[in-house]
Image 1 (tube, helix red, strand yellow):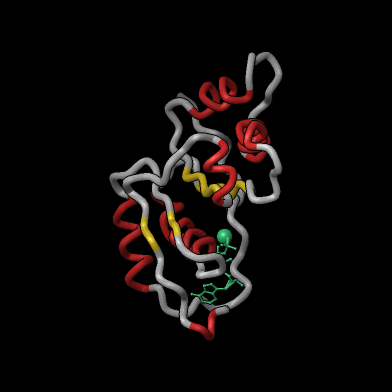
Image 2 (cartoon, protein in one colour):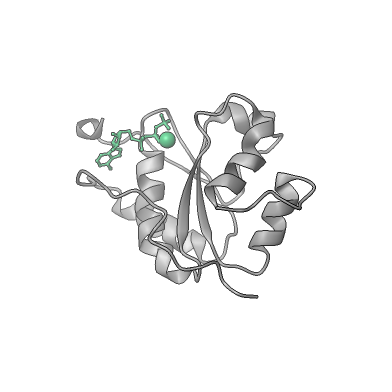
Amino acid sequence: MSRLPRRPSGLPAEVSSLVGRGPEITAVLERLRTARTVTLTGPGGCGKTRLALRVAALAEARFGDGAQLVELAPLTDPALVPASVAQALGVSERDVPTPTAGLVHALAGRELLVVLRSSAWWAKGCGTTPSPSGCSLPPAPSRCT
Ligand SMILES: Nc1ncnc2c1ncn2[C@@H]1O[C@H](COP(=O)(O)OP(=O)(O)OP(=O)(O)O)[C@@H](O)[C@H]1O
Ligand SMILES: [Mg+2]
């Protein structure tokens, strides 16, 4: 299967220094070696997204098709999740019955690290549960917030 065209990183650049989180970075990097899904959970603002993006930047080279951030937090309807992911990954929805089918077809056999930036409500709405591979974060140092 041919790879998606190599393109610039699909991750945003970090615009400030990351404080701490060394053990969590190591743990999540290690988990990513074997788990297909890793879920970070923790209180609002504790640094889940920041950690995920740092880990993704460090792990990106392991994935033949790189890494891509997908913003799901602004969505108001869980039914829009597949189409939003498809759009963010540049998957054409033409000639496919559903966005999910398009995603499956386009990503089959490829190696892409997808960072889903979500919120609790849509996970519930999708009927998903936190992955057994998930990591729960304690609050970040107060100077981070
Ligand atoms: N380790 C850190 N070092 C420096 N800044 C941090 C760190 N962790 C988080 N921040 C900063 O704190 C703010 C909140 O972090 P972040 O958005 O990652 O939290 P979150 O847990 O994903 O929040 P939410 O639950 O709202 O999605 C951001 O401005 C982020 O850059
Ligand atoms: Mg977040």
